[in-house]
Image (cartoon, rainbow, N blue to C red; front, side):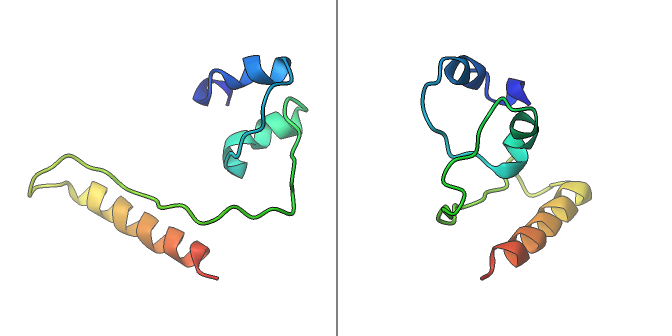
Length: 80
């Protein structure tokens, strides 16, 4: 997963900084001991999620279906 955030390995190898990153993004790095979780009882405030697609009236059925699925799935997980 290091390629998703290319500067993190440099920072972590030098013991620099703290980052707020999604669990799914850093799970492998935590499991391998490359990162250490901090403030585990802290809950980050909700952040907006956007789905972007090219402008125009004609978007594919696949893109619409995926967008609708994500909107439903994410919304249900974010409700308290």
